[in-house]
Length: 221
Image (cartoon, rainbow, N blue to C red; front, side):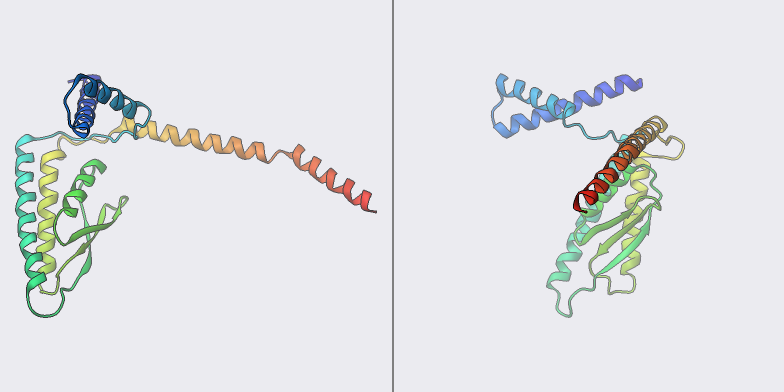
């Protein structure tokens, strides 16, 4: 599949999804609702379009199935642990913020992993160091000596599953085209800022303002 056909397929899928959401909101499948959903979806995709996110790597269906299994298993285990921490006798659970460096290269896949971690009961990603690829994660009930290592095992399993499903090293490549476009946009914005600053620092304006101030002083005298 070429890059253009892939882009068209993604846009068609997004338009179909937005149309389906619109029809579900109205609660009635009719020609008017479908046409209205197509119109609203087209408006959202053109006028309210978000910046493009580079898609790097390749999707492996079997690894995606394994990833879903990992997410479901650890979510169930964490649910039981949080429930027991809430009802067990004794002092309140000890919380902590743990630092975990990740090997995921793509921002899109990293976002998927962060969302998956936020769905784990008792876990919340508080901050992401995008440059150094480090996650700062709030964890519930880390009083036991092996609790921190158990949590790191869970995050490591998540990371391994996401890399296997979406960005294996032999297949991953950076989106150079999108990055170059972004650099061009930054350069154009910088040039625009320079032009604006030049306009506002016009010397003739400064000379005229100083002349007006001197005229006022002469009138007062």
